[in-house]
Image (cartoon, rainbow over all chains, first blue to last red; front, side):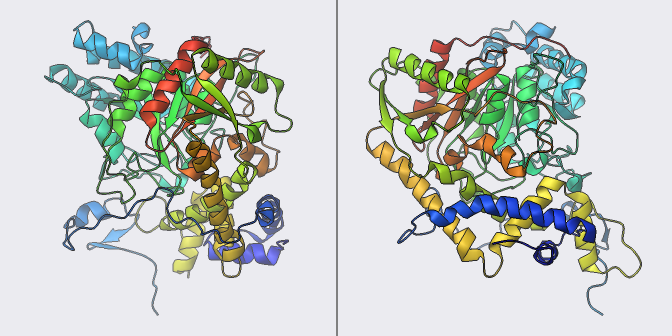
Length: 95
Length: 490
């Protein structure tokens, strides 16, 4: 499986990371090195093996479905790059 | 004053209890060492005022906790209330959490003093502390004019403990990030069983692999500090609701009749002779202490690194999606007409370093439609096989497994710059299996190489049996008698 610059461009966009056009070939090359390394997994016999979902056999705890936290609007917004009138502010999303 | 910062946690604790020293004296000694240790670039956010306030409180406290008055360093990955916590990334520039991570809160509750935040690889992605926004942390060990890496990702923690800037430090370990730097700097580091330490408030890298643990000057200190760090936390759904035994009380040094497994697959092709020799020496030491050695096979070992480099980036790509320039940290300056997608793309391009971008994108790729089964699901299946290998060894009566901690001693900063990313990943070849299987693993300094650099041995234990593992490590430590310290050049 070889990754071309077009795939690299698509992956960068899916990851929402801007990559300049002239950097795409080098990025594709790095992907190929890493994916080449990962390719070894194809030789393992995994017939009948369940994919791991939890490394320790544990059941998630249950609790009452009640509010346990909240009412901290100031704290939630304290680190925002742009907060206005009690909200996170972002560029216009809906036309 | 500097003698005080050289104390082990156990020694300082005993001296504090006898009234021979105060926490303020210990803390001032460490702060002076930190001040003089700038060349190591270990501490990146100093909190001297907070530390002295906590030390004064500790000195007046009656019946303080197990770490009352002990000055520690905290890895920058832990969220600490009101104190910069940015995972060594530009994207968390200026972030001051409104909350305290459970592990660092547990330490504070035990009476510990926080000296400041420690350098690390960005988002804990790296094995040399060279991906940090703060610049490289430097190993206090030095044998020629080269500056050496303290390892990574917990490189600042390792350098700070090895150079006696603090009495102990927290680390985190996703693929070897406690054990490899501990080995490179001649200190002790334990990654407990997955679920022992709460992950709440620790900046997430790969949630199914991340665990916090202590980095200390000896095994006893690791037992004391781990005890304080772990325990059940309802805020982390994967935190284990199991009793925490008294780890220090389990350090008898008696390992007679214990069975130690020696995995044949860890004899790697091209492994340096000095690593083979150290491993043989470790086997001899455990045998002399009364343990029985058995050869075991962990047949899927060679697939551990490729499995890790699917699972860890996949989880990272999901976890790091939260850095979007909206809720915290850096937001890129936007141009005329830029919308929200440009905001995300520019913010993440500016905020993440090269290695982080690479892993996020690899993770995005292996999770994308058409490749999910071929890469991600296959890796999760191989991970199940890697865990099964260990279970079969333990079912045969093996109590612990002895391996080298790293495939080499510390290398020079910048030496891997031109190498392919995979070459750096090979640093974790002996440690990463342990994260994939969720097991406890400890690195113990066991000797110096021919050039005078420290080397570590790793012991891997049964799940939840950190107490037994620490005791085996204690026996190994006593046999190895490692007391060397780096000569001061900084």
